[in-house]
Image 1 (cartoon, one colour):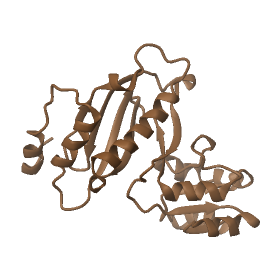
Image 2 (image 1 turned 45 degrees about the vertical axis):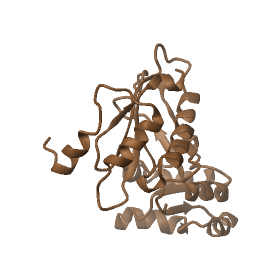
Image 3 (image 1 turned 90 degrees about the vertical axis):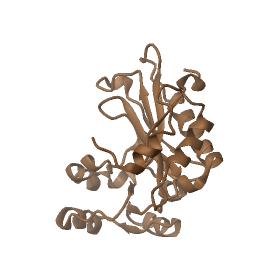
Image 4 (image 1 turned 180 degrees about the vertical axis):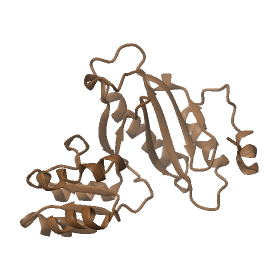
Length: 231
């Protein structure tokens, strides 16, 4: 893959042979983010598990103390009293059959998170083929299927993110924007890593955190010393 001049220049600031402390890694990511927009900073963590086995899945959700810097559009699919609670909690779109039909018939996807109540999972389940590939299917483990819909909406708006393994046993998650600065990004990173460490499956053997790195949207990745996380 051929990179542009800005990326090449930025990559020169990163020592590929070094495992950085988190603070220094985040400083370096901020220095190498030279795009004209406020780049997102992502954390990539490779785990020593096999995601093909159900007892080695790593999945959950966590509220980042400083949010993600992104405005989160929430769709709440619920009925009765929960509709009012969802609106009061700040959901951008609220409904039930009308919303599921809009998604099915118009391929409408103007939302970032879908939150629903257990009694509406029958409705939402029909959307599996559409929502599943986009990572938008609600899940109790992520807190997006819940009887307390107001709380879930407020957490989503405050910067709750879902983490889960991809097919190569890597977790990719945003931890904020370059404009946050090192300290806020460090807080978010520590919170996310704490959740990932706590989610270690009992069936996982050997080294749990194989490697981790941070990178901005357009910048090079900076490797972090995984031993810092104690597993």
